Length: 603
Image 1 (cartoon, rainbow, N blue to C red):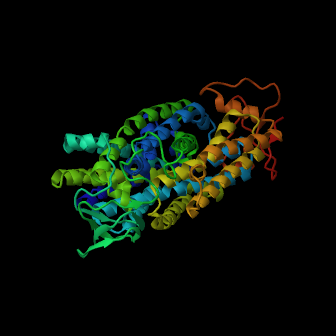
Image 2: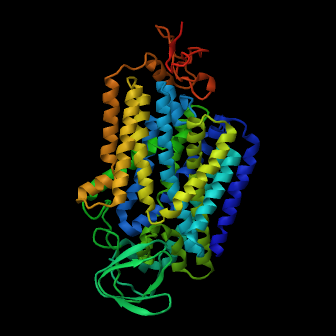
Image 3: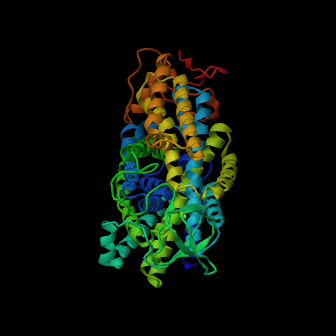
């Protein structure tokens, strides 16, 4: 219960910063991009705080416990994605002047239909990414305090929605920057303490894994979600009343909330299709997606999703719009790479120690809680309690920081891009959206955080990655081509997700490609986008728009030889679009022919 109380100051600080942001929140620009006045250092800390989610703070360590050392490839992909973003996306996106990804899409291609489609895609990505944040909040609070799962979900949803509704992006920026520092300290310090405290024997077992086949001592296990265990031999299990029963080989269903004790020497059941912790192949530096087969294919699929998906994450892209100019956006991305690299050195320590000290979490389906469960296994006194409390606070900081950015883009896509609402509409949308995600998160406890997060990254990789890369670097992109590519990416990934949820019997390589479809969905989306665009004619003002994206800040474009064309929105009076034209060209008063949605040539 003491550990659970540490969540209170984290939540209070988050809400108080949101209250302070009320005074500076007057316009849509204030709400969505903090009036574009965030410095690179502060912005990079906020980006890092927002990006280091439950999947980073807890999920990677839990995956190492369950699936092995190969799970550290997730951290490689998460960080490498920012290198691609730095090279291809960051500065041009800021120079576009857009507030959101749908804003950029309509400004670049003058297509209201594309704006709506990209807004819907933002909702899909945001919800897929928000659910695991709230889900893990419920699991962590349940682990450290014994409260029901739904309590943590509701607390996270309420804290995030109130903070964002009050203070918008400016409040989110300060919260995320503060929580990045908090997470870094609260993850590194306990890790050092654990390594020094466990002793040479445990450290040796951590780097020389042995398969977890039998319980070495009486082990209590609490099942947070419904799990079906597979018993390969007669297995003694003591129930909550203390009655010992030997179960025959076969399947054994355990319900959420069930508490049992496995006596010392009892064989370890199998849970799911994966191997036992420490089994042969556990230390192999490749991912075993969908079983033990085709680890190289699984690793490449995850890397494709995480690296390319990072470029398309709408809450990360919106962060660059808060920079004063393109140069500041580029500096923000560069500093972020360094901050993430420091952070991702640590989760592997928790994962390898967790395999030795809390391998039983493999049975519960809640290996995401391994980080907060470790201190009490090392020290049952005040030190263990203190570090459990610190890690719980850091975990909640991770949930809240990431959820702020995600809830902001989902609400922005709904209120700004789909409903064309103002500041009041956005605040209301924040509260309604948070309530909806909480309802979706309540039945999602059995789904692994890595599955949900990887799906979100895959949708981003197959939709926004080709749209942004081609929209920024290829002048021949057309609106029909962009729409076709986004529909293709969103449709194929959605079908793969539905197929994976139905759990059909498939051969090994096909199971990998269905569960992790980025390897084929992203090239397919690129190919469709290019093919359809080549069959059409790009707008006459496309090269002017491209020039605007790639001009150095403060540079002046050469006067065009032919009359310039300003093409940016079918609704210029709404103030929602941005003008992708050279800075030497004046902004026209009537750039779009009324009612046509098409650009009008300037005299």
